[in-house]
Structure formats: structure tokens, C-alpha cells
Length: 344
Ligand code: ADP
Ligand code: MG
Image (cartoon, rainbow, N blue to C red):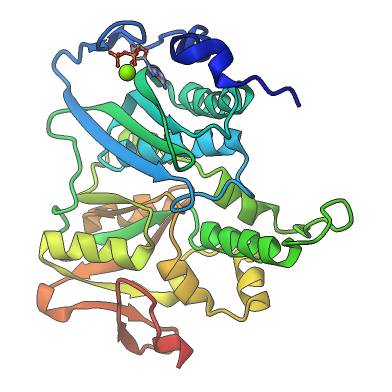
């Protein structure tokens, strides 16, 4: 592949090269890249702001993460935070620290991934910053979004008897990571031509880890039905940990039913292969970017019939604690990390 050193374009040339094809689509974007600051006009809407810092070696491993996927995922995880507030993402800024290892073509790939995510979610890239780095790639993305007054959903609004719902399925992204880590270890030091990693039948797990989706569709579906959740979060650190955030901030307890937790077939197969407890993986595996939300009991039928949404439990009084109810009716306290009871 062609390799153009960044010094050939220089910092300004690089920024121009990466951003010159950007077309702004949102009325709230008044000015994008090219001045000292972007200009936005949110009129009567409330503005949501979220930011994420991603460091090479800490948050991602370029041995198995293609740069286009990294760009896509870096943007998506921010959009997911805006959706989790019941908002719509509208603009992002992208700041990068680059070591000499990276060339213009690498950044082109990275920005292609960001642009793809932006197109899918109707977001404008409006600015950023670029700097040299001594220690690999650093990425900071800030996302702005709009929320309607009175319809923004916080973590602290869950009420007794509310239903606990999740979108999609859980644990797949974590299994994808385990799989990538295993193949990396197996193939370390071997001739790449000679042996290829074996991902047959596990494509979904890789996709969930490398190319996660932000659940715009669920937010739209809820709005269509006139449902405003009482509390909501996206699941980035695992269901168990996120549920505890909702419970502690809302000052309530919960019951979640083991047999209701949505798990994909490939996740289950992989857990068996790794000799891992499947429920533990689904409760504690991170990076699924599904939505966890609570709704009043009156929406039971609506939620029960909503595509790709599952009712997994209910909210109860604070003094009842946070528990997982197993298939045989036993209750185990949920822990924020490494739920060990099933492994004993
Ligand atoms: P300043 O010196 O004010 O920081 P820059 O030369 O860094 O200005 O940036 C010029 C313009 O390019 C600004 O609009 C800025 O938001 C944008 N920009 C800089 N780096 C990036 C980047 N990595 N991605 C997108 N836009 C960028
Ligand atoms: Mg700058």
C-alpha cells in the first residue's frame, strides 16, 4: 500500500485533505471546519455534550483493529451516549495525537470510518485538533446532540414497579474481544502467510466487537409509540454495572431474571468453547452499546411486543437490593464486576 508521510502535507494540509469533502447536513450547524471555532444554533432545543478519550494500548489494539473500524467505533460510542439521553447526535469534533508510525493513508482510512458513522446517523464533523504524539495514537471525540425539553432521560428517574428493558442481546462484544485476544496469542510469532485465524461461524461476535451499532432505531421506535423511559443508559461497561448506576442514582432496588437476559447463539457457543459462564459474560461483558431503560408498568404489552426489546426484570424498593433471580428461583446479589456466584 502507498505510504505518504504526514510531513509531505504538513498539519494544515493534512486537515484540509481529511476535511475538504465534508458536506454539512444539519440546520443546527452554522459553521464547521475552517475557523477558530465551529458555530451551532440549537434554537429552543437543549444541547447534549459527551466526550470520549481513546488511547492506543489502553482502549484499542491496532494489531487486530482496522483503522476504518476504529474510526467508526470511536464515533458510534459517542452517538450511543447521546441516544442514551433520548437525544439525537448532530455534530462531532475529532482530536487526534499521532506518532510517526501513521501516514496520510492511515488517517484517510480512520476518517472514512468516522464519516460512515456520521452518514448513518446524520451527524456533521465540525472540527477538531491535530497534534504529534510520542506514544502512538490518541483519539478524543466530542459529540453534541439535541434533546427536547422535558424528554431528556436521566439515570435517576426509575420508579418502583417500573419494567427493566434492554435492546438487542448482551455479551457478544465481550466474546468477540476474547476471540480476537486468543487468536492474537495463538498467532504471535508465527508466519502470517502460513496460518490464518479461524473465525468461521463467529463473524457476528467480531462484528459486535469491531463494528458496534448505536441504537438510534430503538430511540425512534420509543418516540413513535410515545414512550419516554423513566431512566436510561447505554451498556458500555456491562449490564450489572449499568443497572447499579440506575439503582443507586434512582434510590431503588431491582430484580433481573436470568432466563430473560437476551443472549445470541454465537455468544453461547463461544462461552462453551472458552469454558466461561454464559450469564456472567452477559452480565459483565462490556461494549455492547445496547440501551438499558426503565418504563412504567402500564407499557408492559407495548414493550413485550416491541421489536428487539426485552423485558428482563422490574424495579423494587431500595431495601430489597439489586438481585439476579436464577432459573430455579434463587436470588443472588448483582455485583458491578465479575459476578462469581455461578462459577463456584
Ligand atoms: P487552531 O490553531 O485554532 O487550533 P487548527 O489549525 O488546529 O486551528 O484548526 C483549523 C481548523 O481545522 C479548525 O476549524 C479545526 O476545528 C479543524 N481541525 C483541526 N484538526 C482537525 C481534525 N483532526 N479533524 C477535523 N477538524 C480539524
Ligand atoms: Mg489546533
